[in-house]
Amino acid sequence: MTANLWGGRFEEAASDLLRRFNDSFSFDRELFAVDVKGSIAWAKALEGAGVLTGAEAERIISGLEAIPNPEWNAGDLARESHEDVHSYVEAKLREQIGDLAGRLHTGRSRNDQVATDLKLYLKASCSELDANIVTLARTLAQRALDEAATAMPGYTHSKRAEPVTFGHWSLAYAEMLRRDLSRLRDAVTRNDSCPLGSGALSGTPIDIDRETLAKSLGFARATANSLDGVSDRDFAADYLFVASMLLSHLSRLAEDLIFFTSDEVGFAELPDTMATGSSRMPQKKNPDVLELVRGHAGRSIGELTGLLALLKGLPLAYDKDLQLDKEPLFRTRVILALALPALNELFANLKLNREAMRAAASHDLLLATELADAMASRGLPFRKAHEIVSARVGEAIRQKKTLSDLGPTADITDLDLAALDVDKALTKRASAGGASPDRVRAAAQTALENLR
Ligand code: ARG
Image 1 (cartoon, helix red, strand yellow):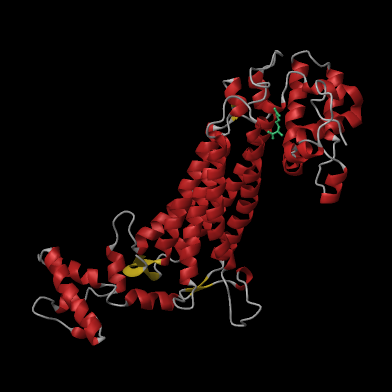
Image 2 (cartoon, protein in one colour; image 1 turned 90 degrees about the vertical axis):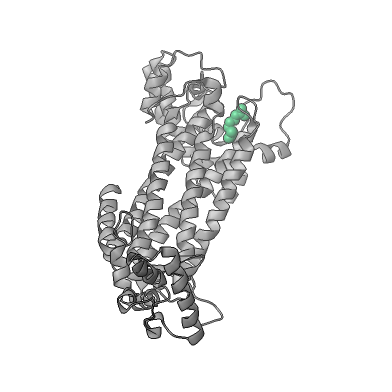
């Protein structure tokens, strides 16, 4: 049992229950690498301020570098108990270099330390996420380029509405991911400030150059207010919001793909490598990956909501509630690091049934708008054309025929009926942002150029 960091004023040892409820080492050891990194930077800052000699700083730094990463199993953890990752690092440093270890904490608090650790941790999480979003968005844009002319029904209210192309649909998700990327990068820029040197809450009394310290840890600047520096967790909420928004988008993508790959629709087939089977029903090929993405989107909204509820109403400055900010971040990072590459592999290898898509998109009821547009282009008010075509659609459904089968009428000319053609309908969607193959090709190219 390691002594805790705050023993002096207490006459009795901490209850075992206190330890079990209070300790965070079982999960915050995830911060080990960044805690060591921050400690090394702090040792150098102390040397810069003349608190440590060069030789002392060097001994502390090589001691820190020699501490084993606590990737322990449950048995190890039970044997060696530590309050948190910060006390673990200090205890292990003491084993390496003796009492000199105690000087590292001069002018520092676990409050500015843990805020710094968390920001460093999220910096790495964000750059990993950035790369994964770019990869997936590029895969979507590349498929959009390849499938720019692959006709597919577009839906509103889950009912066939107007034709689009598979490429146009892919690019819609690439757009969402482009916004996610910009949200992520905004958040990274906004939160690029280092709390270290804020002390417990009022600032450090040591004459540290905090700007140099911040830059040495890869931050753009030092935080501007010590009370805020130790208690701000906006950056964590930003990360969870970016993750929730992103996963909400991916969940919509997943939902569309579940629909497209369903037995009923059959527009696409999951690659074998990204589908699961059933232990009971031999014919099954299940979209578990997509369903998990959809499920994780819900859970991630819960993580964000949980953190906001935790932060709301916290008095300044540090409160122990803040210890509970970490696990949602750790869980979210793990999920994102799996979900995005998995979706990327699934989407890149999705097998399309282009014939089924085209057949569904060519059904002339789905082209009813084209017919009304053609009549309107002859000068008929669109409202009137809509009414006539609508009645014709009713007739077609009753007679189980297509609009073309029903043929021309006094209002509907043969030339109007010629508009009932999926390729013509697509080609006409040539205004900016539209579904015409040329537009989609150009938009996909632009996306590929910009997404990096
Ligand atoms: N384990 C704590 C946390 O995660 C470290 C900070 C402790 N600070 C304190 N004043 N008790 O928040």
